[in-house]
Image 1 (cartoon, rainbow, N blue to C red):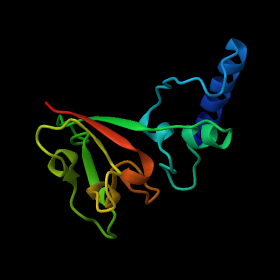
Image 2 (cartoon, rainbow, N blue to C red):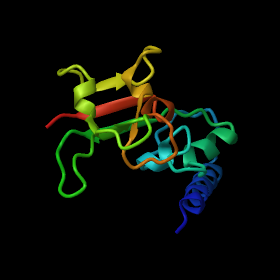
Image 3 (spheres, rainbow, N blue to C red):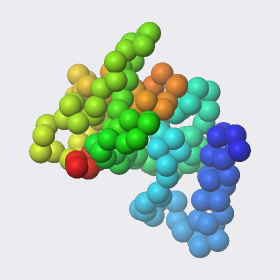
Length: 141
């Protein structure tokens, strides 16, 4: 199924559940979404995320990306990011961008945050981690 269609269906299901249960728009809550659906800006080139749809309908959202620093099989570690530079830049482990003891942090804490200069290895939209998620929770192994 096309990613854009899936995001629209997830959002539509959310709106139906909110309506069926009579939940007020300003009721705080948590919606668990995958990384590509929760991004504040497009995750894939030209596609709209579920979060973007919710925000267009007046919902206030904050995205928290949960990542582990465990190395995976053929696809590598799941905390691998790529610099926004063109060409084929070397991969970077997110754990190397953070203090060794912190496991959660704001991606936008300062204008010189390193998260403005890297992107998720699976995202092809050209958007940085900081543009897509307000917070990162890094579970260290």
